[in-house]
Amino acid sequence: MRFKYILTNLLIIILIVLSGCKNPFRYTDAREVPVDAKERVRKNIEEGRGITILGGDKKGGVFDFASSNELWRASVEVLDFVSFTNASYSGGILITDWFSGNVTDEKSSLRELKITVRFLSNEIRADAIKIIIHEKDCTDKTKLNCNINKIQSSIGNDVKLAILKKAALLKKESEKKNKK
Image 1: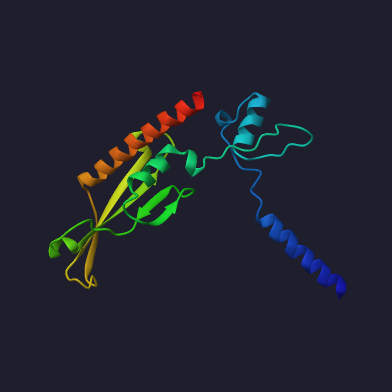
Image 2: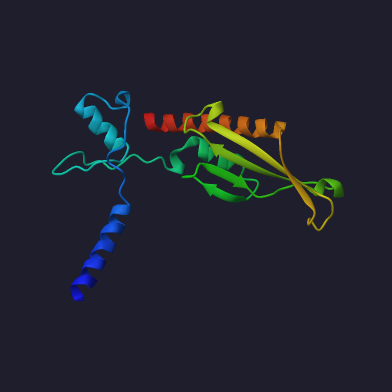
């Protein structure tokens, strides 16, 4: 009886451990695998695969933290006038809260916007970020009866341009500091 209990627990532990393993026999394209062994090792280390025993490179991995990514920092600075509902660097997305700006008339106060920034690349290029604008148009002050629509607006282009300009300035400052 005790043997069955130990064997059952051992099998459960083995299954749990093995469920986290990736399939080592996946098919790869020969054009994606470097021929040179040193290049393969470098590529595997960059991708976070493999281990090094006795010696090897003592440097840590390469991480793209938000503080060193100019596009991320520029987006946060450009959109700092409104709070964020979601700011996930690892997910590559920034979502602002609903905002209406400084409006005085009643009709304009029933319209609110939400800006979503999706990061498609770390490079400072026009196609590296995607700006999505949602509009919430309510019929009364209680804001219970509202329509939410994704809109195409010049605001999206203005925000994108401001982010790219700010990111370019941050990159230039960063390079200037690194030269010193």
